[in-house]
Length: 587
Image (cartoon, rainbow, N blue to C red; front, side, top):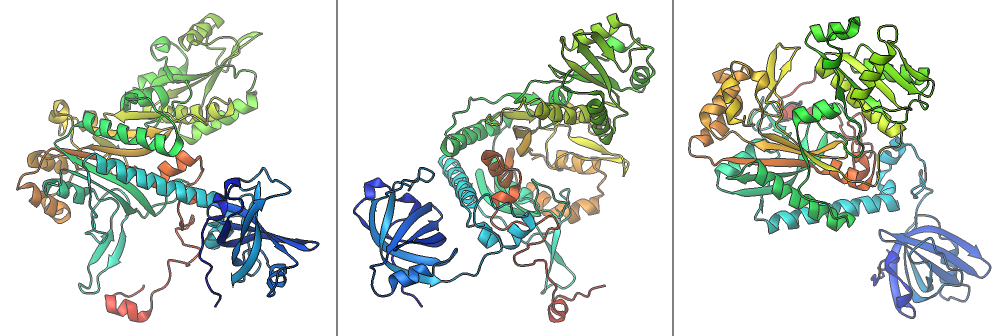
């Protein structure tokens, strides 16, 4: 084995101020080429690249060894830093080079199946299969380093604010939390199973009952659900909980955290406090409970203006208790052909809307898909409700509130992107509060908890839990960044009678309550403080701050769309002996 050259510097840290210094660097060969009596080798480590130059006069076979260097060989080089004759302004070390004196080859490499560079354009499936090569790329090293910085700032901030970092168990009792559990069979208790936690929810509440007062941890969570760009079967949360608190304190603590995080990771000062919208306000204005407020295109309710209309679509929607709402795309009239508008209508139909009605304010006058039902004067009156002017395009939907708000919310984002309204360099934080406590599950014909069954209702609404659950507001709050929910939480129920009412409103029987939540209710018998908290999706937060499109580019070894690890090929088959030990048999 080659003797280790003790590193004195990282490759990307060398500068002109190091000229004349004898240095030792270790890394991978990025590329190597011979020009006459010289071999030029770019050496790469996590900090960047530096050029080393081997001259033909080197003894002990060093030059011959340098001639044989190939991409991804792992080497160590000793030499003196000198000015570079041909400056490369494309890299930070481009003004200097190392005049090599010695070379150690630690290991040789076959030709890699992907190029180790950011612009390799390799298919993601190939990148994930050779993730250890993909991780060598500058972008991935930057991403991992950035994630590390986020975690460091997180720990520093919460420690500075009186939080204690506590680890909660990974092997827990299966509990209903919205998604399917990953189950782990017990060898010593055959027929029984642990679950991997979807969140530390009940344990952090037990920590409050245990007097921890302020808790946080950066913790792995697991959910067996369908995947997408910002979802993984195993993901990381920044989890926290406070005792003797209310919404305003939780929000203030977290605004301080996000302000510090933005300052230390992005060099950006954010204004505090962040804006707040109730859930109802967010849905009415943006058609989303995680609105992107980087551009100003709000949904307008024109139901009152068309209430006496004979147009069957409007009349039918209002008669059924729905509404008529729309968007004004400023300056978009000439950018969307009839065919383009039809495509937008198809998008609206995918969200359940019956279609779209359009009104164009062109130089030739006002035109509409429902022109035969309305006079020009009536159409201009509708346009005035939107504040529309010549050149604008109005898109209107009618029907059930939830359906058309969702459809218009999605169209709003498409229009914002198409019209170039979104400032990609801007970071808009927003709190959404007062979510419904329950949502109706049409498939099962009953109400279910919108968040989880430990969320407290507003005291003024608690009397409606049994009589009118759909109107009960939760003391819940989400933090939104640029149209993505990055965290959510609530004030918890700490009163045993209220917790029992909540369970019964969800249709749980006494034996189910004890089976699933008995250990938490037992703890509540001995005094529990008012408490609340919040959890961030760390992977998603890092993705947004980096401007990446997938959380897979913020995780060292992510799963693919089939929830498989292409490197280790997990999940894999268990042996017959392993199954026998667990008392399991495959069907």
